[in-house]
Length: 260
Image (cartoon, rainbow, N blue to C red):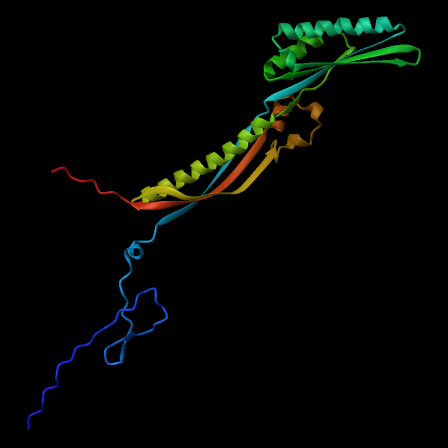
């Protein structure tokens, strides 16, 4: 007795979209189910995820002070008021004239005068505050005044400082150099693995730091009056450090087309 051949049957499958995660199985025509067959991803989803390289960069920059201020103090005590004024004004005129001859602008020279009575005498003081942008000229002028004027004229030690604009420029420079160092690092990494560095996707400054002078400088513990001019400049030098984190896109090497 021969067996009857089973009739052929067709199976219809419904593909569940990938985004529809609520349906665990796919329904077939007989009410049965088959293991999940997924619909291919949409064109936007089938694109390869962006490849990235994450790098950090640091920078440490410094700037010497760009200004120095010196105070010249002239004083005289006389029994007569006119004599005290005459003594101070004579030397004061000599100082201001010498400054003009050295090319100092009037806006960089400030003169204040104080006149008072001390017991049975009259005392007059005049202070000349001079702002220098050229430190070599400052030393020459100070040496000249010390040589030409008597001991009643007192010249202070130079005080070095930074203008607000120079400090802000230093902060900006530290960040830019750190970004450049990070970019160079990412460029070298991509070259090493045969890829092309793309555009930056994220730039973040993670840390900034500023300090004045050398942290481990032994001279910092010495009295300011005992420091030389160069040591004073070094002590007033400002340092700025920056650390950045950058994410770059990574592209494959472009193939060169051969000309037919």
